[in-house]
Each structure stands twice: as C-alpha cells, then as structure tokens.
Length: 251
Image (cartoon, rainbow, N blue to C red):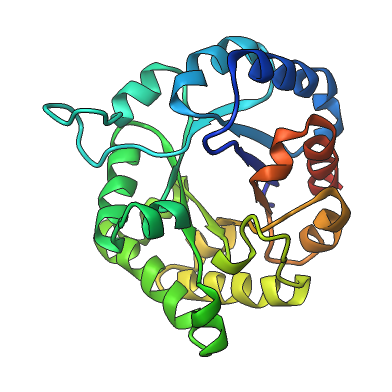
C-alpha cells in the first residue's frame, strides 16, 4: 500500500512573518491530513525556521533544489549534506522551472538525484512536458526520456527510496489542470516504464501529480489508481486550501 504524499513547493515566496503564520496554521490543522504524509519545501533561507516550527509534528521538511557537488568552491550552491544537516528529509530534483529557466539538463538532474541519495535525502524527481510537446503527441516520449536519464544513471533500485512527480509544464501556475483521466494516463505510463525495469520497485513507487492542484479538484485527481498525492505550488501558500488538499489525499 503506497502512502499518499502531499508536498508543498513554496518556490520563491515568503517572509519570516508569513512563514511563521502559515506553518502555525498547518501544525494546528495537521490532523486533517489523516494518514497522508505532508511535506514542506520552503526557500533555502527559511529551512531552519521551518525545521524548528515543525519539530515534534508529523510534518516533513524538504528543499527545492541541491547541488550535484558535495562540497568545494561552488559559490551560492547548497549541498545535500548541508540540507541533511539542516533537518531535510526530501529534496525536489529537476523541477520544470529549473530545467527551463536555469537550463538544467537531464544529465545534471540525474547527478543531483544521485547526490541527494548519497547524503541520505529522498529525491522527488520531477518530469513533465510543455504544451508544444503535448500538442505534438510527444508527452510520453518526453517523460520517458527524462525518467530514463535518471534510471540509466542510478539504476531502478534507487527508486525504492525516491518519489516521481508528473508536472505538465503547461499546467503549472496557469490555472489549467490536466483532467484526472489525462493525469492518470501519464501516471500509468510512468509506472509501466518503471515496471519495465523492475516490477517490485514500480508497484511501490509513489507518483505525484503537480499542476494547478486545488482543493476543488484534488479529490478527483487523487482518486485515480496511479496518483499517490500531489506536488502543490500556489495553493500550498494558503493554509486552509493546502489542508483541504491533504484531507483529499488522505481520503
């Protein structure tokens, strides 16, 4: 049985005051999450603050990115060992904004995935297609290439301690959402791709959907057999909206 996971990606948002208020509300309402695992991925500068605020709660801590390097002269970078030392358990790898805005290649993403696991972190590998890819009928080919780049580098067994998030680029922050059927089609294909490398790993692999998930559509999305939770962007900045999504995942 795969435990549902709802991960909040706050992106480059927040202040010490707003973070304190948001986390306080989440801690107060965390019982709504039921058996779902809840994860917060704040900006680097708020990691320590959030770690202290969620101490002794079931809420997990993650980061939005990490360096492929372990240490050294890499000004402005954050290593996996630093994140682990700060209390992080998870880290996002290969988010579409990193791929498109920062030019991260699938090869670099694979190195970051490996670096995360080297330091005891659970990577959440993000994959997804652009609108042009979807319109050209290339969705599964693009996602397959992104997934295979990591599997080829680290092996399928590494996914026993990893999560994959499908985030259609055309649905991130646009208000557009893949229909539950569209999302399920891709999630089922991803699980089949994993099964082609290792059936046991595939059956236990948690697959998240990310792309304008809201309280109003979460239950329908999460009812799909291969969708095990969500990677939530904008809606995670609103405590009540995010808690409602967590509740939908738990049910």
